[in-house]
Structure formats: structure tokens, C-alpha cells
Image 1 (cartoon, rainbow, N blue to C red):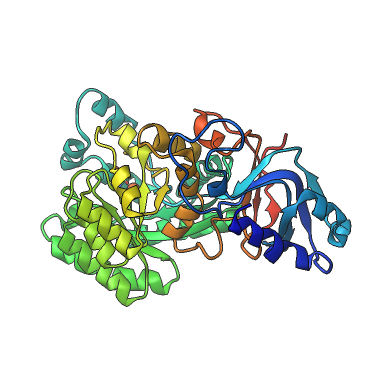
Image 2 (cartoon, rainbow, N blue to C red; image 1 turned 180 degrees about the horizontal axis):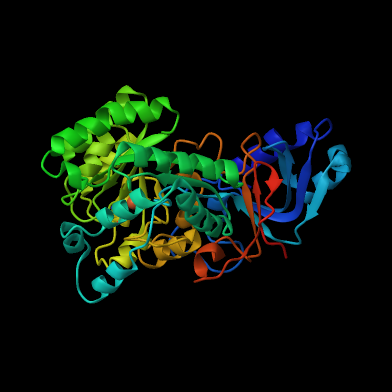
Length: 446
Ligand code: NIG
Ligand code: FE
């Protein structure tokens, strides 16, 4: 038995059995706590326990008890059945289902107006993403549609996408603004993001993506736009409590390293953490910049050199991999996963849900693509949407693993082993979702 599991059973579980109070107990389940350490050797045997069972932090024939919105106890099912606290608890028998931490989609542009299906058709006939962007389409097309949409329209469409993610076990969604590019619409996007958290049983982390694209009206004065975003826009939105973090698209068709740095510096002065869209289409040194500013994450990273990977490792910045965008743009150079792995960079996986490069509302599909297209192991992909994704949002102290005291956010799955979460294409083995200790009413049973 691993040290981690010793601690789990002896340290967390038994002492509080006598006087604990539980509201709910899920019993007869296998837990993938994601508390395990180490990377399993590639090519580990395919029989017996899951390859990397230690990495998943497996607890078989187990139970998990919840008090309020926190995990109160985890341990062997047999111990739970003997515990006095079970008498007053609502007991849910799972007959061998698996429980993982609630999945975290740590990079989305979930809220936008319209769609870009016509551009999809154009790209299929040979036009490139960068070419369409230069012609005023791309992000600018969505900006026009988003500015024209009311808050209610934006909320209704985003809620449909959020529910699709939630149906696959997602309990936390990061949502970026960035399709307003004028203060009033950026504010509307962030307010809609906050309102989704009030309306739906899901947690939201908001990101002010002020530097996404240069809006038309600033075409002849880039610096004025960067000054506005980094100055009054950021401080005003932050003062309104709408900004959990900032993000910038640092790319040849978007913003330079110098412009991005000005924005990150302004965020740091306000005590706000950052993310950076880095190395999606070219290597400008954006990952190194993200590392210099201690960004929570650098995202995309198809174009990343060895120095960039080492810089991310030194700063503890999470590499967020977005295979949906890679797939949609039919890119051919995947991110340097071996270099990231060798450098010890934590890798997260997200949908990048957006109307242009990744109209994807399936985090399980992103996990499949991360394995099949990028070469992640299933364990890395499951870490990538649990503990690594929590780190990418700065919330790992409270979410991302199953641990006593952490938020009771978890997903119930009818699967044989955790790797099955990455295996299906279009399958959804989620049979229930618990968010803040409550079984979500929209979750399927069976
Ligand atoms: O993450 N790269 C910049 N932002 C999005 C794409 C946005 C769009 O095309 O609308 C992305 O891929
Ligand atoms: Fe993105």
C-alpha cells in the first residue's frame, strides 16, 4: 500500500468515524482520488489493476461521505457501514461505479454571439485561420455578433454549452471574456459568466481576456488600446469583482510580447493572477514571458522550445493543452509533450470551447484527443482535467482531488477503470454529478 493511501486511511478516515456527522454517503464505489504521485511507466502491463493505479490514488470498494459542501470522510465501504454517522445520512449505493474529482475545464471562451460555421466551410476549402483573421473575420466576426447580442441571449446560449460540459462530469468552468473588446461588452460577458454560476449548479472562474484582438476602432492606435485595457478597464472590472484572472493572446496576429507584458504587469500590480495564450501559431517567447510573471498557466504551446519548457517548470506554470483547437485548425505539430514531461511541467487539458478554433463542448473528447493526438497517457489526461486543471486556476487547495476537507465536487462514472474516461469517442459514461455536496438534478442516473 502506498504512503499516500496509508495516510488516507489512518490519518483521515478512522479517527472521526465515531463522532462524525454525514449528510450523504456514496458507497460501493471505487475512488480515483487523484492524490497519487509519480508517473506510471509507459507501456505498463494491461492486466490486473489499472496501469498507474498509484497515480490515480485508487481506493477500491470504498465510500465517500459528505457534510454540507465538504468531503467529510473517505475509506473502505465496510468501515462506512459500521460508522454511527451513516444512520442519519442519505445513502447512495453505487454498485461498483467509479468516482473522480469533478472535472475542471480550465480554458473556455464559452460566452459569445453567433457562430462561425461559414468560416469553417471556408477553411475546409483551403483558407487559413490567420488569413481569415487578417481579412476582418475570425475573432472580429464574433466580436461584432457579441456586441449585438443582449445579456439574456448570451446567457441562454452559453448555458446550453455549459450544460453539455456539466453532463460529462464538469463541476468548474473557466470562462474568458475577449469577444467584446469595448468596456461595456467585456463587462457584460464577465457579468454573464458570474450569472451562470448563480443560475446553474456549477462553479465559474472568470478571466478578463482584454488582449484578445485589436478592435477595429483602435486599428490605428494599438498603444492606446493596450493602455486602456491595462489601465482603467482592468482596474474598473477588477474593482467590480468580475475578474479572477487575466489572459492575453500573445501571437503574431494578436499582441506582441511587449504589449502582453504591459498587461501582465498591470494585473500583477492589482494582485491578479494571469494566463497567456502562448505558442499557438508561432513561438514569440510568450511562454518565457508567462513564466517570468509567474502566470498560473501558458496555454496551447504547439510552438514551444526547450527553453520555454524549462522556464515553465521553474515558475510552476501549468501547460494547458488544447487539442480541440489543434484538431479544428488541422495543425500538424503537436505541443512538445516529451519535453514538458521531462522538464516536470504539469499539463492540463481543456476544451478551449470557442466559435472559431474549437467549437467543442466535450471535455472527455478533449481528453481522448490529448491522448491520441498529443501522446498523453490516460493518467496524465485525467490529471489534466482534475488536479493539474485546478492548479491552472489557482484552486488546487480546495478542488482537483478527493480529499477530506476539500469541496465535495465529484463525478460518478459507469466505467471499468479510469482510463476509460479517455477511451470513448462520443460516449458519456457519467451517471451523476455532485457539486458542493449536492447531487445535481440534471445528472443522469443508472
Ligand atoms: O484559444 N487563440 C485565441 N483565441 C481562441 C480562438 C478565438 C477565436 O478564433 O474566436 C483560441 O483558439
Ligand atoms: Fe483560447
